[in-house]
Image 1 (cartoon, rainbow, N blue to C red):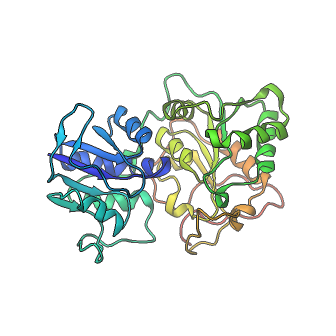
Image 2: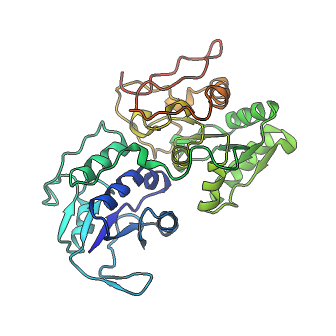
Length: 350
């Protein structure tokens, strides 16, 4: 039997779905797991053994099903379908069009599907784990891991990823430059990363930091596997609320993540809490704002440079490498607060 899983979204979404994908494997051992997702992401997860193959898909377009996979074998109608994409009805209908024997998905009256209730306050990872566990697929946050917490070759550089897909989550370039300059002044080997579209932003950060050879810019040069390797061997990743932050969680890399429109209680790190610092000036308990808005989110705008720099030093030095824990999204460690810096809001609900 083929198990068709839909999660045709970006890097962060793919990574937060890894635990649930492992639950799918456990629910139907020995069956072929096909992930409908963007080709590079799906191929990467295939190469890592998380799924068996990728059906290239982006967004909620109609899936070509029956589908001739990479080996030429035709997947017949009547597969089992799992919706890890959304609550429906559109995503439900995309899978219903494949005429599956059964659809595993959240409850949606419009799509005529009965399933578990959707919970707006639930962490993204826990939500999809709950769905898969409802059909016997054992999974938990620890299943997010993609590599050893401590790579055999050790950790060397500090990665700074200043970009984000939307302006709402894009901290000002001048502040990123100040953080980079501070890290370089502390003799850290700093590497700037970003997509091809973010090369101009990274170049501006590089110029404004004015730190000479202490900072390298590799934006637009890394494939997804190469980016993952850089994160896996980094001493620290500093970024906004974007997909690369979830790579740090997957590889146990210490991180500092800046949040704005989306509370970290919904999308922040769930494992190895001692390795991760979140910086957020939102109001606990308030609903998330639009993460794709065209203007800088006010909570992110309130984050000062010195708080981020202090967070970096804390994440780099606070615990031995073998100390980690699995947690729920509440009560993270906090960096020392510089004099006069705003007090960060709590990580989880008040």
